[in-house]
Amino acid sequence: MTIGTLENYSAAEIALLFNEAFEDYKIKLQFNEKTMAQKIKAENISLKYSPVVYVDNRAVAFILNATGFVDTIPTIYNGGTGVVAAYRGRRLVRKMYDYIVPALAKAGYMQHYLEVFDDNHKAINAYRNCGFTISRNMQCYRGKINNTDTGRYSIETINLMPEKFQLFWDVKPTWQNSLTAIERVPSENNIIGISRDNEVVAYAIYNQVTGRLKQLAVDKNFRRRGAATSLLNYISNTSASNDITITNVEHNDAIQQFLASRNFSVFTGMLEMKYQ
Image (cartoon, rainbow, N blue to C red; front, side, top):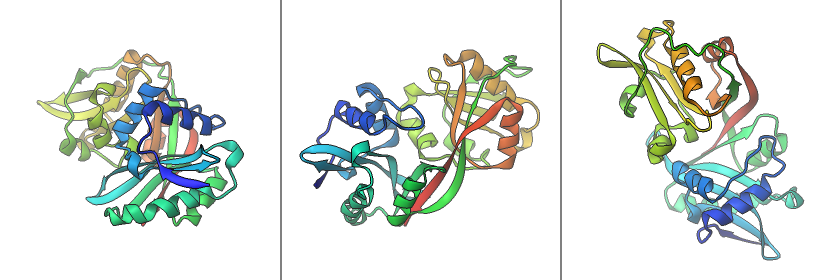
């Protein structure tokens, strides 16, 4: 067994390795060259900091590590850990972290984040053995909007306004749904909003092709007036997908109650874990 990095791998080669490792995953994840290149760009994955394990010259395990900042602290985000089924149970995740953490620390990265299914106890234990602890409980939702009337609001395409949008948040988006990730691939995201007196009071960011909703928030002084419902209805009208999905939302009673009232249900729970 040897360990290296994915620095000289192409997006197509990474997609093939990823698909093999995730072929029995509980949620279907299949990439091609284009979609893997988009993932690498959106999440800012650094291939030189992404370890890969070889057994008999065959790549059998990897971690896609992304670089960036969380609360101004240099941070690593695990955008995917994969181990080919026949090679699981050999502590390869621990070996990859033991290999790459010294290089990351030398480069100044002070903390690491990842997400894992809350019922994947083997993976949770593997990450605990690497020094990770649970930092947030999250949920993933799926729903079909029945009422597609946008109501009394005029909804329009708007520009990304990071400083303003953050004022509306009750929970902080995870790495994949962050404003930084959205900025990296603007062509993949639609940004819509509702304004009052020339000021945006509600917005949503979503992928029109997949129906994945990445952010939805309303000014705290403009809530319970149907703005969020109108945005969801608009997304349902304009999305190519029959279902709207919302992934990795930090557990919040008010958010859960609102989504349940709009025909959304939780299809899986997630844990955010942190190493520092």
